[in-house]
Image (tube, rainbow, N blue to C red; front, side, top):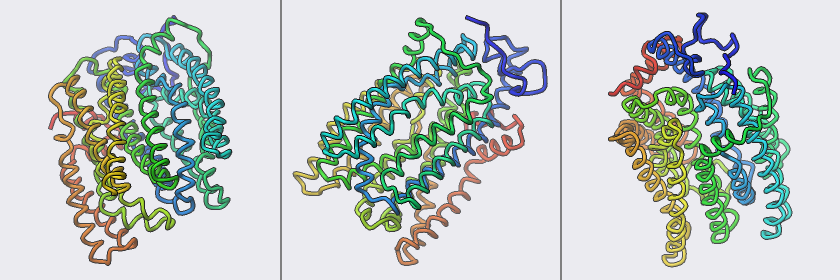
Length: 527
Protein backbone atom coordinates (compact mmCIF):
# COMPACT_ATOMS: atom_id res chain seq x y z
CA UNK A 1 0.00 0.00 0.00
CA UNK A 2 1.41 3.39 -0.97
CA UNK A 3 1.70 6.25 1.43
CA UNK A 4 -1.16 8.73 1.54
CA UNK A 5 -0.74 11.34 -1.15
CA UNK A 6 -1.27 15.02 -0.79
CA UNK A 7 -3.99 16.85 -2.65
CA UNK A 8 -3.00 19.17 -5.49
CA UNK A 9 -1.89 22.63 -4.49
CA UNK A 10 -5.09 24.12 -5.90
CA UNK A 11 -7.04 22.21 -3.27
CA UNK A 12 -5.16 23.66 -0.33
CA UNK A 13 -7.16 25.19 2.46
CA UNK A 14 -4.72 28.02 2.92
CA UNK A 15 -1.50 29.26 1.43
CA UNK A 16 0.49 27.91 4.34
CA UNK A 17 2.86 24.99 3.91
CA UNK A 18 0.95 22.85 6.36
CA UNK A 19 -2.64 21.84 5.65
CA UNK A 20 -4.11 20.64 8.97
CA UNK A 21 -7.28 19.16 7.54
CA UNK A 22 -5.58 17.23 4.77
CA UNK A 23 -2.84 16.18 7.17
CA UNK A 24 -5.51 14.80 9.49
CA UNK A 25 -7.24 13.07 6.59
CA UNK A 26 -4.01 11.44 5.41
CA UNK A 27 -2.96 10.28 8.84
CA UNK A 28 -0.15 12.80 9.30
CA UNK A 29 0.17 14.64 12.58
CA UNK A 30 -0.73 18.34 12.35
CA UNK A 31 1.23 21.02 14.18
CA UNK A 32 -1.43 21.14 16.86
CA UNK A 33 -4.91 19.87 17.54
CA UNK A 34 -6.23 23.42 17.59
CA UNK A 35 -4.79 24.10 14.11
CA UNK A 36 -6.51 21.02 12.72
CA UNK A 37 -9.74 21.99 14.45
CA UNK A 38 -9.64 25.53 13.08
CA UNK A 39 -8.88 24.32 9.57
CA UNK A 40 -11.72 21.81 9.66
CA UNK A 41 -14.12 24.39 11.06
CA UNK A 42 -13.25 26.86 8.31
CA UNK A 43 -13.66 24.30 5.55
CA UNK A 44 -16.95 22.88 6.81
CA UNK A 45 -18.30 26.40 7.39
CA UNK A 46 -17.58 27.36 3.82
CA UNK A 47 -18.65 23.95 2.58
CA UNK A 48 -22.03 24.19 4.27
CA UNK A 49 -22.80 27.34 2.27
CA UNK A 50 -21.89 25.72 -1.03
CA UNK A 51 -23.68 22.54 -0.06
CA UNK A 52 -26.75 24.58 0.84
CA UNK A 53 -26.67 26.33 -2.53
CA UNK A 54 -26.41 23.00 -4.38
CA UNK A 55 -29.20 21.54 -2.24
CA UNK A 56 -31.40 24.57 -2.92
CA UNK A 57 -30.99 24.23 -6.69
CA UNK A 58 -31.27 20.44 -6.77
CA UNK A 59 -34.23 20.03 -4.48
CA UNK A 60 -35.92 23.11 -5.89
CA UNK A 61 -35.74 21.49 -9.32
CA UNK A 62 -37.06 18.18 -7.96
CA UNK A 63 -39.90 20.01 -6.22
CA UNK A 64 -40.79 21.81 -9.45
CA UNK A 65 -40.79 18.47 -11.25
CA UNK A 66 -43.13 17.03 -8.64
CA UNK A 67 -45.46 20.02 -8.87
CA UNK A 68 -45.37 20.84 -12.60
CA UNK A 69 -45.01 17.53 -14.45
CA UNK A 70 -48.52 16.30 -13.45
CA UNK A 71 -49.82 19.21 -15.56
CA UNK A 72 -48.80 17.23 -18.64
CA UNK A 73 -48.51 13.62 -17.47
CA UNK A 74 -51.53 11.49 -16.50
CA UNK A 75 -51.71 9.40 -13.30
CA UNK A 76 -51.81 6.18 -15.35
CA UNK A 77 -48.47 7.09 -16.93
CA UNK A 78 -47.01 7.73 -13.50
CA UNK A 79 -48.43 4.37 -12.45
CA UNK A 80 -46.66 2.63 -15.33
CA UNK A 81 -43.47 4.44 -14.41
CA UNK A 82 -43.94 3.41 -10.76
CA UNK A 83 -44.13 -0.29 -11.69
CA UNK A 84 -40.99 -0.04 -13.83
CA UNK A 85 -39.19 1.96 -11.13
CA UNK A 86 -40.16 -0.53 -8.43
CA UNK A 87 -38.36 -3.42 -10.12
CA UNK A 88 -35.37 -1.38 -11.29
CA UNK A 89 -35.10 0.24 -7.88
CA UNK A 90 -34.68 -3.23 -6.40
CA UNK A 91 -32.07 -4.18 -9.02
CA UNK A 92 -30.24 -0.90 -8.43
CA UNK A 93 -30.09 -1.51 -4.70
CA UNK A 94 -28.41 -4.85 -5.30
CA UNK A 95 -25.25 -3.02 -6.39
CA UNK A 96 -25.40 -0.20 -3.82
CA UNK A 97 -22.78 -0.73 -1.11
CA UNK A 98 -22.20 3.00 -0.36
CA UNK A 99 -18.60 2.62 -1.47
CA UNK A 100 -18.21 6.38 -1.88
CA UNK A 101 -19.01 6.87 1.79
CA UNK A 102 -16.41 4.24 2.65
CA UNK A 103 -13.84 6.21 0.63
CA UNK A 104 -14.51 9.21 2.88
CA UNK A 105 -14.40 7.06 6.02
CA UNK A 106 -11.20 5.20 4.99
CA UNK A 107 -8.29 6.86 6.79
CA UNK A 108 -5.72 4.11 6.21
CA UNK A 109 -5.18 4.29 2.44
CA UNK A 110 -4.17 6.97 -0.02
CA UNK A 111 -6.96 8.70 -1.86
CA UNK A 112 -5.85 7.12 -5.14
CA UNK A 113 -5.85 3.58 -3.73
CA UNK A 114 -9.21 4.03 -2.02
CA UNK A 115 -10.64 5.46 -5.23
CA UNK A 116 -9.29 2.56 -7.33
CA UNK A 117 -10.66 -0.10 -4.97
CA UNK A 118 -14.10 1.51 -4.91
CA UNK A 119 -14.09 2.05 -8.69
CA UNK A 120 -13.30 -1.61 -9.38
CA UNK A 121 -16.06 -2.79 -7.06
CA UNK A 122 -18.57 -0.27 -8.47
CA UNK A 123 -17.96 -1.48 -12.03
CA UNK A 124 -18.33 -5.14 -11.03
CA UNK A 125 -21.52 -4.47 -9.08
CA UNK A 126 -22.88 -2.22 -11.84
CA UNK A 127 -22.34 -4.96 -14.43
CA UNK A 128 -24.22 -7.42 -12.23
CA UNK A 129 -27.10 -4.95 -11.79
CA UNK A 130 -27.30 -4.28 -15.54
CA UNK A 131 -27.48 -8.01 -16.30
CA UNK A 132 -30.20 -8.45 -13.68
CA UNK A 133 -32.29 -5.64 -15.19
CA UNK A 134 -31.86 -7.17 -18.63
CA UNK A 135 -33.43 -10.37 -17.29
CA UNK A 136 -36.15 -8.63 -15.25
CA UNK A 137 -37.50 -6.54 -18.16
CA UNK A 138 -39.12 -9.30 -20.28
CA UNK A 139 -40.40 -11.13 -17.19
CA UNK A 140 -42.24 -8.07 -15.83
CA UNK A 141 -43.47 -7.07 -19.30
CA UNK A 142 -44.98 -10.50 -19.83
CA UNK A 143 -46.49 -10.56 -16.30
CA UNK A 144 -48.15 -7.17 -16.76
CA UNK A 145 -48.88 -7.84 -20.44
CA UNK A 146 -47.30 -4.51 -21.44
CA UNK A 147 -44.36 -4.47 -23.85
CA UNK A 148 -43.69 -0.79 -23.07
CA UNK A 149 -42.69 -1.85 -19.57
CA UNK A 150 -39.80 -3.88 -21.00
CA UNK A 151 -38.22 -0.84 -22.63
CA UNK A 152 -38.90 1.36 -19.61
CA UNK A 153 -37.06 -1.12 -17.41
CA UNK A 154 -34.21 -1.57 -19.88
CA UNK A 155 -33.65 2.21 -19.82
CA UNK A 156 -32.17 1.68 -16.36
CA UNK A 157 -29.44 -0.73 -17.52
CA UNK A 158 -26.70 1.88 -18.16
CA UNK A 159 -27.77 3.71 -14.99
CA UNK A 160 -26.37 0.81 -12.97
CA UNK A 161 -22.92 2.28 -13.63
CA UNK A 162 -23.86 5.68 -12.19
CA UNK A 163 -22.17 4.76 -8.90
CA UNK A 164 -18.81 4.48 -10.67
CA UNK A 165 -19.34 7.77 -12.49
CA UNK A 166 -20.28 9.53 -9.25
CA UNK A 167 -17.27 8.33 -7.24
CA UNK A 168 -15.24 11.54 -7.82
CA UNK A 169 -18.02 13.42 -5.98
CA UNK A 170 -17.07 11.52 -2.83
CA UNK A 171 -13.37 12.25 -3.26
CA UNK A 172 -14.26 15.93 -3.54
CA UNK A 173 -16.18 15.58 -0.29
CA UNK A 174 -13.25 13.77 1.32
CA UNK A 175 -10.93 16.65 0.41
CA UNK A 176 -13.44 19.32 1.50
CA UNK A 177 -13.65 20.62 -2.09
CA UNK A 178 -17.23 21.75 -1.60
CA UNK A 179 -17.31 24.51 -4.22
CA UNK A 180 -16.38 22.25 -7.15
CA UNK A 181 -18.77 19.59 -5.88
CA UNK A 182 -21.63 22.10 -5.66
CA UNK A 183 -21.03 23.39 -9.18
CA UNK A 184 -21.07 19.83 -10.55
CA UNK A 185 -24.28 18.92 -8.71
CA UNK A 186 -26.00 22.10 -9.91
CA UNK A 187 -24.94 21.38 -13.50
CA UNK A 188 -26.26 17.83 -13.28
CA UNK A 189 -29.66 18.85 -11.94
CA UNK A 190 -30.03 21.75 -14.38
CA UNK A 191 -29.31 19.54 -17.40
CA UNK A 192 -31.52 16.69 -16.19
CA UNK A 193 -34.48 18.93 -15.34
CA UNK A 194 -34.22 20.89 -18.59
CA UNK A 195 -34.36 17.73 -20.69
CA UNK A 196 -37.21 16.31 -18.60
CA UNK A 197 -39.37 19.43 -18.93
CA UNK A 198 -38.59 19.78 -22.66
CA UNK A 199 -39.57 16.20 -23.44
CA UNK A 200 -42.73 16.43 -21.30
CA UNK A 201 -44.01 19.83 -22.44
CA UNK A 202 -42.68 20.38 -25.97
CA UNK A 203 -42.38 16.81 -27.26
CA UNK A 204 -45.25 15.38 -25.18
CA UNK A 205 -43.40 12.12 -24.51
CA UNK A 206 -45.53 11.21 -21.50
CA UNK A 207 -44.02 8.50 -19.33
CA UNK A 208 -40.75 8.58 -21.29
CA UNK A 209 -40.12 12.13 -20.09
CA UNK A 210 -39.77 10.67 -16.58
CA UNK A 211 -36.83 8.41 -17.52
CA UNK A 212 -35.03 10.37 -20.25
CA UNK A 213 -33.23 12.45 -17.62
CA UNK A 214 -31.22 9.44 -16.41
CA UNK A 215 -28.80 9.12 -19.36
CA UNK A 216 -28.44 12.91 -19.39
CA UNK A 217 -27.48 12.80 -15.72
CA UNK A 218 -24.83 10.17 -16.44
CA UNK A 219 -23.36 12.14 -19.33
CA UNK A 220 -23.09 15.29 -17.21
CA UNK A 221 -21.48 13.32 -14.37
CA UNK A 222 -18.88 11.90 -16.73
CA UNK A 223 -18.03 15.26 -18.31
CA UNK A 224 -17.98 17.38 -15.13
CA UNK A 225 -16.71 15.12 -12.35
CA UNK A 226 -13.92 13.13 -13.98
CA UNK A 227 -11.77 15.80 -15.69
CA UNK A 228 -9.51 17.36 -13.09
CA UNK A 229 -10.71 15.08 -10.32
CA UNK A 230 -7.15 14.91 -8.95
CA UNK A 231 -6.82 11.09 -9.02
CA UNK A 232 -5.52 8.79 -11.70
CA UNK A 233 -8.30 6.42 -12.70
CA UNK A 234 -7.06 2.89 -12.13
CA UNK A 235 -8.56 -0.48 -11.37
CA UNK A 236 -7.20 -2.04 -8.18
CA UNK A 237 -7.58 -5.79 -7.71
CA UNK A 238 -7.19 -6.21 -3.96
CA UNK A 239 -9.40 -9.02 -2.53
CA UNK A 240 -8.60 -8.21 1.15
CA UNK A 241 -9.56 -4.58 0.55
CA UNK A 242 -12.71 -5.70 -1.28
CA UNK A 243 -13.70 -7.71 1.78
CA UNK A 244 -13.16 -4.68 4.03
CA UNK A 245 -15.21 -2.39 1.78
CA UNK A 246 -17.99 -4.93 1.36
CA UNK A 247 -17.99 -5.57 5.10
CA UNK A 248 -18.61 -1.85 5.59
CA UNK A 249 -21.19 -1.74 2.81
CA UNK A 250 -23.18 -4.98 3.07
CA UNK A 251 -25.51 -3.75 5.87
CA UNK A 252 -26.18 -0.58 3.83
CA UNK A 253 -26.79 -2.76 0.77
CA UNK A 254 -29.16 -5.02 2.73
CA UNK A 255 -30.92 -1.94 4.09
CA UNK A 256 -31.45 -0.59 0.58
CA UNK A 257 -32.78 -3.95 -0.60
CA UNK A 258 -35.31 -3.98 2.27
CA UNK A 259 -36.53 -0.50 1.33
CA UNK A 260 -36.71 -1.48 -2.35
CA UNK A 261 -38.71 -4.61 -1.52
CA UNK A 262 -41.05 -2.52 0.65
CA UNK A 263 -41.68 -0.16 -2.27
CA UNK A 264 -41.96 -2.98 -4.81
CA UNK A 265 -44.58 -4.92 -2.83
CA UNK A 266 -46.48 -1.76 -1.82
CA UNK A 267 -46.81 -0.28 -5.28
CA UNK A 268 -47.87 -3.60 -6.82
CA UNK A 269 -50.41 -4.24 -4.04
CA UNK A 270 -51.88 -0.77 -4.54
CA UNK A 271 -52.00 -1.23 -8.31
CA UNK A 272 -53.86 -4.52 -7.89
CA UNK A 273 -56.29 -3.10 -5.30
CA UNK A 274 -56.96 0.36 -6.72
CA UNK A 275 -55.68 0.41 -10.29
CA UNK A 276 -52.87 2.02 -12.26
CA UNK A 277 -53.95 5.61 -11.54
CA UNK A 278 -53.70 5.16 -7.78
CA UNK A 279 -50.28 3.55 -8.25
CA UNK A 280 -49.42 6.87 -9.91
CA UNK A 281 -50.68 8.73 -6.83
CA UNK A 282 -48.54 6.49 -4.64
CA UNK A 283 -45.50 7.09 -6.84
CA UNK A 284 -45.95 10.87 -6.50
CA UNK A 285 -46.23 10.42 -2.75
CA UNK A 286 -43.05 8.34 -2.74
CA UNK A 287 -41.23 11.10 -4.61
CA UNK A 288 -42.26 13.58 -1.93
CA UNK A 289 -40.99 11.20 0.75
CA UNK A 290 -37.74 10.88 -1.23
CA UNK A 291 -37.48 14.66 -1.08
CA UNK A 292 -37.35 14.34 2.70
CA UNK A 293 -34.57 11.77 2.34
CA UNK A 294 -32.55 13.95 -0.03
CA UNK A 295 -32.94 17.09 2.07
CA UNK A 296 -31.56 15.21 5.05
CA UNK A 297 -28.72 13.57 3.19
CA UNK A 298 -27.58 16.72 1.38
CA UNK A 299 -27.43 18.71 4.59
CA UNK A 300 -25.88 15.92 6.64
CA UNK A 301 -23.20 15.09 4.07
CA UNK A 302 -21.80 18.62 4.41
CA UNK A 303 -20.80 17.76 7.96
CA UNK A 304 -20.09 14.03 7.48
CA UNK A 305 -16.29 14.43 7.09
CA UNK A 306 -16.27 16.41 10.33
CA UNK A 307 -18.31 13.70 12.07
CA UNK A 308 -15.67 11.18 10.99
CA UNK A 309 -13.01 13.39 12.63
CA UNK A 310 -14.97 13.73 15.89
CA UNK A 311 -14.13 10.10 16.64
CA UNK A 312 -15.19 9.16 20.17
CA UNK A 313 -16.21 12.66 21.28
CA UNK A 314 -19.79 11.73 22.21
CA UNK A 315 -20.65 15.25 23.38
CA UNK A 316 -19.88 16.74 19.97
CA UNK A 317 -21.60 13.88 18.16
CA UNK A 318 -24.70 14.30 20.31
CA UNK A 319 -24.73 18.06 19.80
CA UNK A 320 -24.31 17.75 16.03
CA UNK A 321 -27.15 15.20 15.91
CA UNK A 322 -29.50 17.61 17.66
CA UNK A 323 -28.44 20.52 15.46
CA UNK A 324 -28.90 18.60 12.21
CA UNK A 325 -32.39 17.57 13.30
CA UNK A 326 -33.20 21.18 14.03
CA UNK A 327 -31.87 22.27 10.65
CA UNK A 328 -33.87 19.57 8.90
CA UNK A 329 -37.06 20.75 10.55
CA UNK A 330 -36.34 24.28 9.33
CA UNK A 331 -36.83 22.85 5.82
CA UNK A 332 -39.21 19.96 6.41
CA UNK A 333 -41.75 21.46 8.84
CA UNK A 334 -43.08 24.19 6.49
CA UNK A 335 -43.33 21.72 3.60
CA UNK A 336 -45.24 19.31 5.83
CA UNK A 337 -47.68 22.05 6.88
CA UNK A 338 -48.18 23.18 3.27
CA UNK A 339 -49.05 19.62 2.25
CA UNK A 340 -51.39 19.16 5.20
CA UNK A 341 -53.29 22.44 4.75
CA UNK A 342 -53.13 23.32 1.06
CA UNK A 343 -52.91 19.99 -0.83
CA UNK A 344 -56.67 19.85 -1.74
CA UNK A 345 -56.33 23.17 -3.56
CA UNK A 346 -52.83 22.72 -4.98
CA UNK A 347 -53.72 19.48 -6.81
CA UNK A 348 -56.35 21.48 -8.71
CA UNK A 349 -53.47 23.00 -10.69
CA UNK A 350 -52.82 19.55 -12.18
CA UNK A 351 -54.82 17.54 -14.67
CA UNK A 352 -58.31 16.70 -13.48
CA UNK A 353 -57.35 13.02 -13.02
CA UNK A 354 -55.16 14.00 -10.04
CA UNK A 355 -57.99 15.43 -7.93
CA UNK A 356 -58.42 12.26 -5.87
CA UNK A 357 -54.80 12.32 -4.70
CA UNK A 358 -55.23 15.26 -2.28
CA UNK A 359 -55.84 13.13 0.80
CA UNK A 360 -52.73 11.09 0.17
CA UNK A 361 -50.57 14.21 0.09
CA UNK A 362 -52.13 15.43 3.32
CA UNK A 363 -51.13 12.13 4.93
CA UNK A 364 -47.60 12.64 3.59
CA UNK A 365 -47.53 15.95 5.47
CA UNK A 366 -47.76 14.09 8.78
CA UNK A 367 -45.24 11.53 7.54
CA UNK A 368 -42.84 14.36 6.70
CA UNK A 369 -42.66 15.51 10.31
CA UNK A 370 -42.02 12.14 11.93
CA UNK A 371 -40.29 10.53 8.96
CA UNK A 372 -37.69 13.31 8.95
CA UNK A 373 -36.96 13.41 12.68
CA UNK A 374 -33.84 11.42 13.62
CA UNK A 375 -33.36 10.63 9.93
CA UNK A 376 -29.57 11.10 9.93
CA UNK A 377 -28.94 8.87 12.96
CA UNK A 378 -27.22 6.33 10.70
CA UNK A 379 -24.50 8.77 9.60
CA UNK A 380 -23.03 8.57 13.09
CA UNK A 381 -22.86 4.79 12.92
CA UNK A 382 -21.34 4.93 9.44
CA UNK A 383 -18.75 7.49 10.55
CA UNK A 384 -17.65 5.06 13.26
CA UNK A 385 -17.53 2.15 10.77
CA UNK A 386 -20.48 0.29 12.35
CA UNK A 387 -23.14 -0.07 9.66
CA UNK A 388 -25.06 -3.11 10.90
CA UNK A 389 -27.77 -1.05 12.71
CA UNK A 390 -28.54 0.56 9.32
CA UNK A 391 -29.64 -2.83 8.04
CA UNK A 392 -31.57 -3.72 11.20
CA UNK A 393 -33.72 -0.58 11.03
CA UNK A 394 -34.67 -1.23 7.39
CA UNK A 395 -35.34 -4.89 8.16
CA UNK A 396 -37.77 -3.75 10.86
CA UNK A 397 -39.46 -1.60 8.21
CA UNK A 398 -39.85 -4.66 5.99
CA UNK A 399 -41.39 -6.58 8.88
CA UNK A 400 -43.76 -3.62 9.23
CA UNK A 401 -45.01 -4.16 5.65
CA UNK A 402 -47.73 -6.71 6.58
CA UNK A 403 -49.25 -4.16 8.98
CA UNK A 404 -49.07 -1.54 6.22
CA UNK A 405 -51.06 -3.84 3.92
CA UNK A 406 -53.46 -4.90 6.69
CA UNK A 407 -54.48 -1.27 7.22
CA UNK A 408 -55.23 -0.98 3.50
CA UNK A 409 -57.24 -4.20 3.36
CA UNK A 410 -59.19 -3.56 6.58
CA UNK A 411 -60.27 -0.07 5.57
CA UNK A 412 -60.91 -1.00 1.94
CA UNK A 413 -62.58 -4.39 2.22
CA UNK A 414 -64.16 -4.38 5.68
CA UNK A 415 -64.97 -0.72 6.34
CA UNK A 416 -65.51 0.24 2.70
CA UNK A 417 -63.40 3.37 3.15
CA UNK A 418 -61.23 2.60 0.12
CA UNK A 419 -57.96 4.56 -0.02
CA UNK A 420 -58.31 5.87 3.56
CA UNK A 421 -56.35 2.80 4.66
CA UNK A 422 -53.35 4.04 2.68
CA UNK A 423 -53.52 7.41 4.47
CA UNK A 424 -53.51 5.69 7.86
CA UNK A 425 -50.68 3.40 6.75
CA UNK A 426 -48.52 6.31 5.59
CA UNK A 427 -48.95 8.19 8.88
CA UNK A 428 -48.35 5.06 10.96
CA UNK A 429 -45.19 4.28 9.00
CA UNK A 430 -43.80 7.74 9.78
CA UNK A 431 -44.45 7.29 13.51
CA UNK A 432 -42.91 3.82 13.46
CA UNK A 433 -39.77 5.01 11.67
CA UNK A 434 -39.30 7.86 14.15
CA UNK A 435 -39.58 5.49 17.10
CA UNK A 436 -37.06 2.95 15.80
CA UNK A 437 -34.54 5.59 14.68
CA UNK A 438 -34.76 7.37 18.02
CA UNK A 439 -33.99 4.11 19.80
CA UNK A 440 -30.75 3.60 17.87
CA UNK A 441 -29.76 7.27 18.21
CA UNK A 442 -30.05 7.01 21.99
CA UNK A 443 -28.18 3.72 21.97
CA UNK A 444 -25.14 5.38 20.39
CA UNK A 445 -25.35 8.98 21.60
CA UNK A 446 -27.02 8.67 24.99
CA UNK A 447 -29.95 10.82 26.09
CA UNK A 448 -30.94 12.61 22.89
CA UNK A 449 -34.35 13.56 21.52
CA UNK A 450 -34.82 14.63 17.94
CA UNK A 451 -38.37 15.82 18.70
CA UNK A 452 -37.23 17.89 21.68
CA UNK A 453 -34.52 19.51 19.56
CA UNK A 454 -36.90 20.43 16.73
CA UNK A 455 -40.20 21.24 18.46
CA UNK A 456 -39.71 25.00 18.03
CA UNK A 457 -39.47 24.66 14.25
CA UNK A 458 -42.56 22.45 14.15
CA UNK A 459 -44.53 24.87 16.34
CA UNK A 460 -43.37 27.85 14.24
CA UNK A 461 -44.44 26.14 11.01
CA UNK A 462 -47.87 25.27 12.45
CA UNK A 463 -48.38 28.84 13.70
CA UNK A 464 -47.32 30.35 10.37
CA UNK A 465 -49.46 27.81 8.52
CA UNK A 466 -52.53 28.75 10.56
CA UNK A 467 -52.10 32.42 9.58
CA UNK A 468 -51.55 31.56 5.92
CA UNK A 469 -54.51 29.20 5.87
CA UNK A 470 -56.77 31.82 7.49
CA UNK A 471 -55.86 34.24 4.68
CA UNK A 472 -56.47 31.48 2.15
CA UNK A 473 -59.96 30.85 3.55
CA UNK A 474 -60.81 34.54 3.68
CA UNK A 475 -59.97 34.89 -0.03
CA UNK A 476 -62.39 32.15 -1.04
CA UNK A 477 -60.56 28.83 -0.57
CA UNK A 478 -59.55 27.93 -4.14
CA UNK A 479 -56.30 27.06 -5.86
CA UNK A 480 -55.36 30.68 -6.56
CA UNK A 481 -55.95 31.81 -2.98
CA UNK A 482 -53.57 29.07 -1.84
CA UNK A 483 -50.65 30.98 -3.41
CA UNK A 484 -50.91 34.15 -1.25
CA UNK A 485 -51.70 31.94 1.73
CA UNK A 486 -48.45 29.99 1.26
CA UNK A 487 -46.53 33.22 0.60
CA UNK A 488 -47.74 34.82 3.83
CA UNK A 489 -46.99 31.62 5.70
CA UNK A 490 -43.42 31.76 4.37
CA UNK A 491 -42.99 35.38 5.49
CA UNK A 492 -44.28 34.64 8.99
CA UNK A 493 -42.17 31.51 9.30
CA UNK A 494 -39.04 33.30 8.08
CA UNK A 495 -39.63 36.10 10.58
CA UNK A 496 -39.92 33.62 13.42
CA UNK A 497 -36.66 31.96 12.39
CA UNK A 498 -34.83 35.29 12.57
CA UNK A 499 -35.54 35.32 16.30
CA UNK A 500 -35.43 31.60 17.14
CA UNK A 501 -32.50 30.50 14.95
CA UNK A 502 -29.96 33.25 15.48
CA UNK A 503 -27.12 30.72 15.62
CA UNK A 504 -28.11 29.39 12.23
CA UNK A 505 -28.04 32.83 10.62
CA UNK A 506 -24.75 33.71 12.32
CA UNK A 507 -23.33 30.44 11.04
CA UNK A 508 -24.46 31.15 7.47
CA UNK A 509 -23.19 34.74 7.65
CA UNK A 510 -19.76 33.61 8.82
CA UNK A 511 -19.70 30.90 6.17
CA UNK A 512 -20.45 33.55 3.55
CA UNK A 513 -17.61 35.71 4.86
CA UNK A 514 -15.27 32.73 5.12
CA UNK A 515 -14.69 33.14 8.85
CA UNK A 516 -14.47 30.23 11.26
CA UNK A 517 -15.63 32.36 14.19
CA UNK A 518 -19.26 31.57 14.80
CA UNK A 519 -18.98 28.60 12.46
CA UNK A 520 -19.36 24.91 13.16
CA UNK A 521 -18.07 25.06 16.73
CA UNK A 522 -20.65 27.69 17.69
CA UNK A 523 -23.40 25.92 15.78
CA UNK A 524 -22.71 22.61 17.48
CA UNK A 525 -22.55 24.14 20.94
CA UNK A 526 -25.39 23.02 23.18
CA UNK A 527 -28.22 25.51 23.54
